[in-house]
Length: 639
Ligand code: ADP
Ligand code: MG
Picture 1: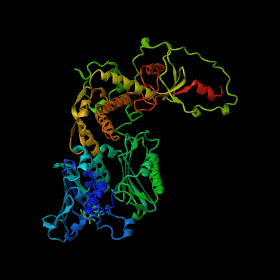
Picture 2: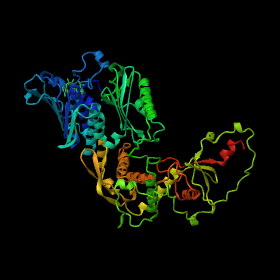
Picture 3: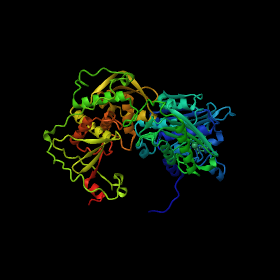
C-alpha cells in the first residue's frame, strides 16, 4: 500500500455517482424528484435508447437563479438543508446535494433554467465533470435538464448496462413510482419520440394505477385507510384473487416518497395470510404520512430504504387496518377476473375439466392434428371460459393406464399382526403429527397385480400403504408431476406448435414486465408465444402454444414473464420451456378439494410408478411423505 492521499473532487464525484447513479433510470428518478421538490405541477420526461443516449426532464417548477447554477451542479450543494437539524426533519425528496454533481461527472449534462421573475433563461453545461460558464439561453419558466451519453467516460459502468428494452423498463418503473406518489402531477414519458404515458393532473389515484397496471387490477382494488395518532395510512389493497409471484407490485409511499420496507411488506403478507396461497404475493398501493422527524431518510444513498422511529407501530397499523377491512368486506362477492391461482381455486371448474381432459388427451397423443394440420377452432378467451360440459360437474379423470409388463413383480404385502397390542394408555400415544421428521418418499415398487387403494382425506391427500410403511400423497402435486412428465416426453418428440389467434389479445403488463417480454421475444416465439408491442405497456399476443388451448394467453404470458424477472440470471430457452410445461401441468392437474372416485385414485397411484422423481412436483414441493413402518412401530412403542 502507498501513502494516504486526499482524493480529487472528480474522483469523489465518480465514487458518489457509483452509489447514486446506477443506470439511466437513476437519472430519471433524481431529476423527477428535483422537479417535485421545485414545486412543479408538470413534468415531461423524454428518453432515447432506453435513456442511455438521452434523458431529458423538463418541469414548470420554481427554476434556478443564474447565480445558483454553478452550485446546483457542484457536489454537496443543496438548497434543501440549511442547518444540521434539518437533516432530521426532511420534507423534500432530495437533500444530499449530490445528484447533479454525480450525473455531471459521468455524462454530458446541460441544465437550462428560468425563474418566474427573470426575463430570460440561463444554462450551464458539464462535460464528464468539466463545468462550463453560465450563459443566457431562451427557455420557459422552470427547469429542463438533459443528460446525454451516460457513462461515456466510465466504460466499466457502461458495460453493466443492459439492452435498450431492459433499461427502458427500469426508466418506466422509476417514472411510475414518482407518478404514483402524486396523482395530481401531470407527467408524460416519451421514448424515441413515441409517447409511452400521458397522465393528466385530473387523474384520481385509482385511475392512475389503472393506467399503469390495467383496468382489471384497478377494479379489484379495495380502499383502506386509518389514522392512528400522527400516522395516516391510506391506499388500496388488491382483492386476494389478484396476486403475483413476486412482491414488486407492492408500492409503498412515505410522505410521497416511494420506498421499500421489509417490515411493512411482511405486515402486508400477514394481512393476507390465509387469503392467498403461499408463494404468492399480495398487491397493494399504500401511502403513509407521518411527521418527518419520526423517520430517518438518510440511511440509503438513493433513499429507497428509510428507518422508522417506531416501526412496530407502523407494522401493526398496516396489519390491523387491512385485516379489519378484509373482515368487513365480503371478499367472495367480487369475482377476481385475472390470474386465478393455479393450484387452488379461482378457475372456472367447467373450464378446468375441459382443459384437464384436453391436456391429458394431448399428452397421450389422442388429439390428432393439434398443431399439425387441423388445429382446433380458435375460441376467444370469453368463449373459451364457457367451454365444457355443463351437465357433469367434473369429468372423470382418465389417465394412461399402467403398462405393467415392464414392471418387476413386487412383493405381496402381508399384514403383519394387524391386531397387535394397542398402546396401554391411548392418551399418551403420540399422534402422527409428532412423528419425528418423516422422510420424503421414494417411488414405491409396484404391487404386482394388486389394485392400488388409498383413502382420500379432506379431498386433498391420499393415504396409502406401501412396502415401506405408509404414504401420504398430495393429490394435486402428484397429478401435476405426472402430467408434467407426460408433456415433457410428448414435447421432446416434436416441437412446440403455435396456435395463431384470429384477433390478437392485448395484455397489460407493468413497464418492467413488458420490457422483459419484448427483450425475450425470440425465445418466447420459439415456445409458440408470439408477441408485439402495442403502445404503453400493453403487449399483443398473436399466437400461443397450441397445447395451452384453454389457458388465457395473458396468463401464459404473465407466467413466463414472472419467470423472466425472477432471480438474477436471464432464464434460457429451457427454463422458459420448463415454466411453460409447469403452467400447463399445474392448471390441468386435479386440484386440492376435488373429490376422487376409487378408480381415479387407483389410476393416480398407478401413474406414480411411471414417473421418475415422482416424489417432487415440478415446483419442487414434495408430492408425498412416507412414514416408515419402523417409524410407526417406534412411535407406538412397539419396538
Ligand atoms: P438535492 O436535490 O439533494 O438538493 P441535487 O444535486 O439533486 O441535490 O440538486 C442540487 C440543487 O439544484 C437542488 O438543491 C436545487 O436547489 C437545484 N435544483 C436541481 N434541480 C432543480 C429543478 N428541477 N428545479 C429547481 N431547482 C433545482
Ligand atoms: Mg436531488
